[in-house]
Length: 188
Length: 189
Image (cartoon, rainbow over all chains, first blue to last red; front, side, top):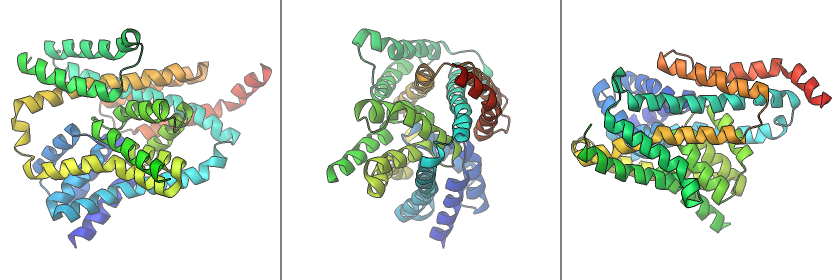
């Protein structure tokens, strides 16, 4: 029974979670609380872990909730359920859109949607940056500010210095190492 | 055939293992691996998939993996890439679910993640700048980038309940309404 509920609950999440992980969290909360799987507090700590481990936050949360309710099989069911809708939707879109993409009116709409996505990506980055530099609306902790400047210069100067852009994966590994060193010495 | 399936699985497992901070941070990593290194898709296609991913439910990374996998090797490719991107985090969470309460207690681990959290916004901004660099610089799209950026920032800042999908729909509608004008201009050139 619990497996069936996990399947249905996370299919719902996968199907209705628009706008990335932060849109999905309220939806996951609804599902988890309505089935009475976890308390709000336990869910919050799972969200914190899911945000700091690699991979899509939504998938991490599904695995986590599934494992907590029904072990390995529960984790598999919940993860499968949360992934399935987007998998199928993309396959359908690929089949349908091949011809639709050539239509001039669809093209006109896309010419508006693409710049909008660029704006949304930039705004999300900028907003997350303000969160780092001003946690809870207070001024910037000096360590965060300095580390942000260091990371920015590393990423944007690397093409000029190394003649090659630093790969994003190397950049993340470097930020983890630098973070562990700098934040340990200067807790900020 | 088996080689491409293995390649898809490994590349997406690498992407899944090293991307922190959700979908937008993944865009840089996917662009670096699938567009620049493997040349599985072009930058324009990458933009198309980003649009599709944003306007359909579910994690962006899953949509990307499914798209690239299917394009390279059909259904089997779609499955390999999607399993590849999910598997690392699945295993990590499964391991952690037993000891999750103990982990944040180590200051070194906390600081490591704090470093990554500081780096993620910069990585996302870099992905955004990269898209700006490669777009066609016409007046209407440029205006939309700026307006959408300001609108989305305010939506986030004041925690307004207005989804990014609705914002994209509005911008699409504006562009469609302007089509008779932009079309005439295009024809005049």
